Image 1 (cartoon, rainbow, N blue to C red):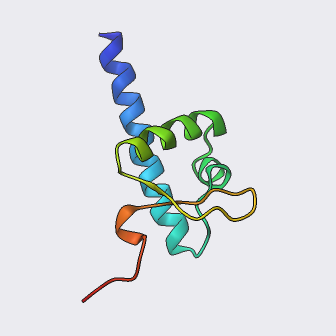
Image 2 (image 1 turned 60 degrees about the horizontal axis):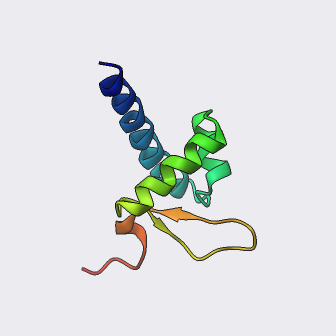
Length: 83
């Protein structure tokens, strides 16, 4: 039972991170670990671990590093839209 509850919490944080990346991008901000954590009011370490999982599963991609900051992007937002 506890394993399932832990998985639900992780999935919830992953969903929140995905939403936060979209929110920050729509505001013209660069979604970095620190900005995502601040936006969500969550611990930066927890956000960082979940971002690593999201990158590993292809749900989030790492953008080009800007100095010390590592931006994270949603796969659909990594290039110009074609239409």
